[in-house]
Image 1 (cartoon, rainbow, N blue to C red):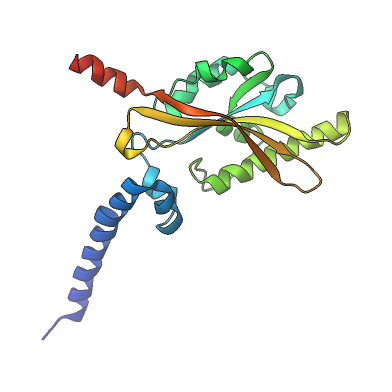
Image 2 (tube, helix red, strand yellow):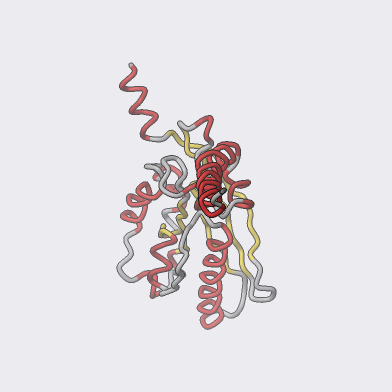
Length: 210
């Protein structure tokens, strides 16, 4: 007699290994975006894999820094801590042009200071990240409306993106300006800069090879 339950268990085990051990890695190699859209989220592609860390740094107008955010914030420390969540990416040269007028703060730091909670915090989930940016813009708009009258609120956002599988020696990034208005509640984005920077392990590998 055929044991149906045992057969189903074997099939389930093979399917589990096939999906997570074969299909997911192959699709992730092709595109983390495709993997995130159709196979359970960016987390399957990005969770604890070197080269796949997304991290967000906000450049907030220093003159308009919200009191809740400003308390205890050290912009230099935020910049120096950024590489820990971005595969070691050094962003000092990228943010330097804004430092006279803006204060760099990691998105996670802002969220903790504004006491915004989420059980599924992951910066690689773009929809969640954008929702947080929208809430931060709303907080800035409220402060602006109280002090100066209503108007658009503009933030600069630097995003360290995942490393393409086939060229893993450089970390892609982009810098955008996010403008929010209370009229429609939408965020409008303008690309200010994009590019790549060398990753520490690439320099180390070249040093060892040479």
